[in-house]
Image 1 (cartoon, rainbow, N blue to C red):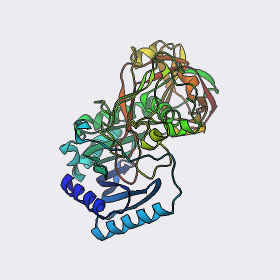
Image 2 (image 1 turned 135 degrees about the horizontal axis):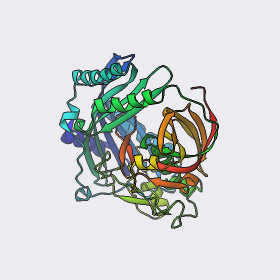
Image 3 (image 1 turned 90 degrees about the horizontal axis):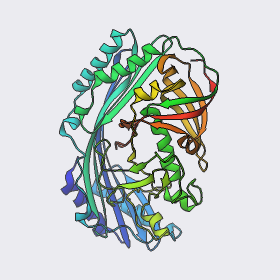
Image 4 (image 1 turned 180 degrees about the horizontal axis):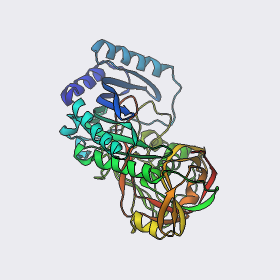
Amino acid sequence: MIGKREAKRVLNMVFEQSKADQIEVSVFNHEQSLTRFANNYIHQNVNESNSSISIRAIFGKKIGFASTNSLDSKKIRETLKWAEEIAKLQRENNDFTSLPSVRKNQYRTVKTFAKRTAGITNTDRAKAVAEIVSVADKYSLTTYGSVSNGTAEVCIGNSLGTLAYATCSDVFCNIVMSGGDSTGYTRAGARDILNINFEKLAEIAAQKAVHSANPIEMPPGKYTAIFEPLAAHEFLDFLGYYAFNAKIYNEGRSFLCGKLGKRIVDKRFTLVDDPFSSKGFAFPFDFEGVPKRKLVLVSKGIAKNLVQDSLTGSKTRSKSTGHALAAPNPFGPIPMHLVLKGGTKSLDRMIKETKKGILVTRFHYTNIIDPYRLDFTGMTRDGTFLIEDGCVTRGLKNFRFTENIIDCFNRVSDIGRRSVLVASDPGYGGRFATGVVTPGIKIKSFAFTSGTEF
C-alpha cells in the first residue's frame, strides 16, 4: 500500500503532464495471500502484491485508455502517452459528455478496513485449515478448499477535481467435504476475520456430506424447491447483470425494456443495491469516483430503477447512480451490492411446510441461455436433498435444470427470514471483495430437466 498522499501525488503528476481535454487516473494496489488444502493437508501457500495505474484520456469525444502495473515515473509517462495517442485514433463517442465532477464532502464514510484481517499471517491461515481438517477427520471425510485474505487500495481521480480513496480488507474461505459418494460445501467471506468461524463452516459442509451419503435418483420433473442462499444468489446475480444494466437496457437487450414502473415478479420480492449494508462488502464509490448510494431496483414486485454510470447517464440525460466498472468497460454498469429483503419464515419452517420437495445447497456451472428472457441453466451440487412430509430424509443425485428467472420469482412460495452474505470467490488478479446478501428462497414447480450419475 502506498497511502493516500503518494497516490494523490501520482495522480497530480499525470494531470500536470497530460495534454488531453480531460483525464482520469485510477491507482489500484493489492496484497493477498492464499492457503490451499486438499486430501486433508496444505498443498499450496502463496503471497502476492501488485500495483497498477490506469489512465483514460479524452480529446473532445474521443476516448483512449492505457494501463501498466508499474508505478515507476517513466512507465507512468509512457502509459499517459499511449492513452493520449490511442484517444486521437478513436472515433468520437457521441454518448460521452464529461467525466464526473465530485466534491470531497459528497462521499459517505464507510468502514471497509479491519487491521486484524489485513494482518492475518501464513500461520493464522494454517491454523484455520487445521480446524477444518479436524472436523473432516471427526467424520472420516476428505476436505478440499482454501483460506485467503487480502487488502486493496483504490484511488480514483480526474482533472475535474474528483478524488476518491479507500482501503479495504477481506477474508474468504471455501470448503468441500467429500465422502465415498457424497459431498458437502460451504463458503464465507467478510471484511473482519472475527466474523468467520472456520470450525462452524467445516461442520456445515461435513453435515451435508454425511447426510447426503448413498444418494438416490429422482426422476426429472417440476418440484417445489428450497434454495439455500448459496444457490439463491445466482438468480440475483444474473438478474442484476442482465436486467438492470442501463447499457443493455438502452440497447434494447434487457428484459426490463418497457417494463419499468410495472410489476414483474411476486409482490413479496424487494431487491435493493445497498453499498452501505452492514452485512455486505460496503464501499463508498464506484470506479469513476462517483459516490455510491442505495438504489431500489424492485419494490414489492415492481421494477423501479436501472443502474447507471456516467456514459449511460449522459445518453439518457440522467445522473450516474455510482455503478461504473473500471475502464475500459464494454459491459456497462452493474449492481455490485445486491440485497434481497428477507421474509417471515425460517429455513427450517419452510422445510417443515413442504410435503414433498428438494433442498438445494448450491449450483454449479450456471449459464444464461437467453439474456433477454433471462433463461438460465446449470446443475445442483454438493448437497441436494429430498424433503418428505416436512423433513429432510436423504440425499439425492444431482439434477440439471433449465428455468426462467422471472417466472421463478413469480412462483415464489416463501422468502426466508435470515439473510446472509454470499461472498464471491476472489479468484485471480486484483483483489476486490463482492457479494450478494440474500435469504433462502422457496419456489414452486421448479423445472429439473435431467439427472446425473453422482
